[in-house]
Image (cartoon, rainbow, N blue to C red):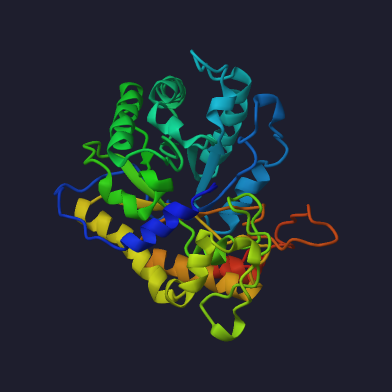
Length: 380
């Protein structure tokens, strides 16, 4: 998940949309059924633990996979803190106990015919690591692709989540080498690839022309961050003082701007919210990814999108999801929302029992419907 992306976000807004060139003629052929690879969720805060011993395997169970299926979802993106699941440098040998956990999750997904994306979601506090990450990821993906090369088509590999603070050319070359590592062991499974700039749609066009025909190109969507990340303590700067920003922009409902955020990127967004906080603007941003897809003739996927629950007006949050998800579906772009049970999730959070997530009792049904999921309380 996103951390200190604010300055980069502003620069990308200034750059705006740039057309892609028609550079590839052949269609890509990811090993998926498009009717099944449609939309889904993240089972986060599970395998993102600091080490194998910290994994709470009871956090999710087969029942959660079943419930995703009941919602009409076809994808579970599974964030994994892979570095922490190894013995570290120089071997980065993946822990066998961790494999037993991952094997079980994969088996549940396969049984239910849910695509499961093994997402390398290690977060590095120093972004410069992405310039030198290749040896580490080479060892990790060599092991993982050997272990799962005989599993069903429902298993997918995601090389690296949200690479940043690395030049597009450098990351593009590193990612190509990692694709080659996987393909030495596994020519069957689809690989998810990401652009630099925190998996930005604006950086898709800077990826090299990969010749592998079984790739899906990922981008993430949290625009406008003034709305999606209000009252968030985990970003830099924290926006805990920011709340009740409407979507779309409504001058009569705009709150005063917090004094502690003056001089930050959020002040720039606030001052320009009449432009960036509109339905048409969000569609223009998604169109950047559509243009890339159509010019390269590749498959794209919106791997993350969402709105932080605290601070955002509830009805406006539902409308944002309806706007973004319906436009993604209109353009045949599969997606996974961040997240499922946590503070970006699809459950109502009770003030008296904030940890409770009963399915379907606690679901935010207006939100569920706005995303495009089925209402599981209705018998068909």
